Amino acid sequence: MYINIMKRGAKILLIDNDKKILILRRSLTHPIWPHHLDFPGGIIEKGETPKQAIIREVLEETKLKIDINQLKLIFKKRRITGFILYAYEYHIDVNQPKIELSWEHDKYNWMSRKELIATKFPGKVDWVFGKVFSQAKKN
Image 1 (tube, helix red, strand yellow):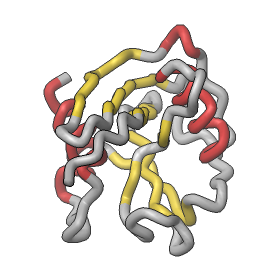
Image 2: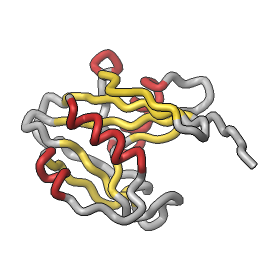
Image 3: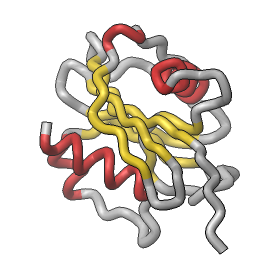
Image 4: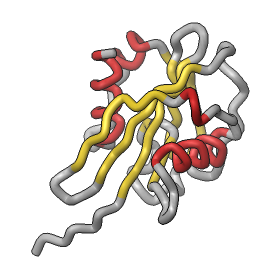
């Protein structure tokens, strides 16, 4: 039986002055795909816009404050399940700022696009991660 859950999520590519992208690793206690690589982001809560959600998620997960006016929408994609993903890009005006991780992630790294392409991902790679990065390669 098909159930339309109509949830929405937002992910972000945080890019520093050296064009390195912030990659997080989900913690062992993360409820979805523990120890998988991830971009900052998450579910859009009721009453939030996608931009408001990504601002909140970035702050919660990394303690970084970003300017809502500098967010660039990379794409919006609806899955057959009804889930809608918004993906943004944001350029941070420093090199590799200090990150303070929440419980959701246990490691982070700043990687070049070349390093990301060369990275071997687990078998069940989060479709969001793959979709966001494949779109980013086009930009």
